[in-house]
Each structure stands twice: as C-alpha cells, then as structure tokens.
Amino acid sequence: MRRTQAVPTVQVSNERVIVTEWRFAPGAETGWHRHAHDYVVVPQTDGELLLETPQGERTAPLAAGQAYARQLGVEHNVINNSAHEVVFIEIEIR
Image (cartoon, rainbow, N blue to C red; front, side, top):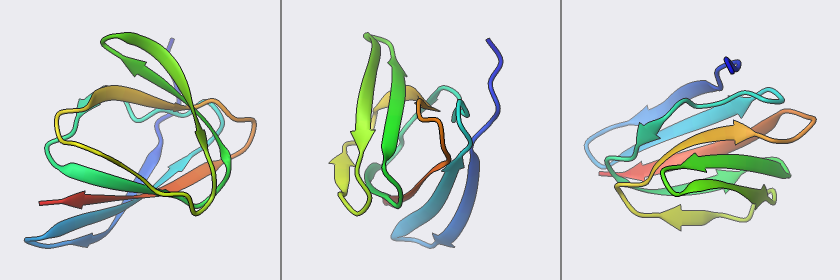
C-alpha cells in the first residue's frame, strides 16, 4: 500500500545534533529507515503510531510532552495510526 509521506523539517543541524520536526497526516509514513545516531523524540501531540519493524508490527502511544529515547541502529517505518495529525520533534545526537 502506498501512503502519504510524513513531512520532516530540519530546525537545527550542526556537528552535535540534528533537530527535526516531523508532521504526519492521518496514515502518513516516514518510509523504512535505519537510525545512524542515538535519538530522543518529544511528541507535540497525543496520538498513536504504528511501527513496522523487521520483527513485526506494533503500536506505540504518543503523549504530548512525554519524551522517549532510542539507540542508533533502530530500523523501522513509522506510520500515524491516529485520525488526526501527529507532530513530534526528533533530536539526533551525533
């Protein structure tokens, strides 16, 4: 199935961090990718994500302001599983 693409906007990119705002319309996806850096996600909206991973699918709730962190090497496709736009800030640590 072909989905709408999520919209990334890089806000900061320097030798230490990359800060990207991600906006997902309902059903929008990032496309499959592998993270090259440790990163922190700070949701700006509540919602639910569908994560497609090599190990299978799972859902992940988002709560506005409730940050979470992941290590480099994570491979997935992130899909907005909510009926409304979802926004989060992703901070990659170089």
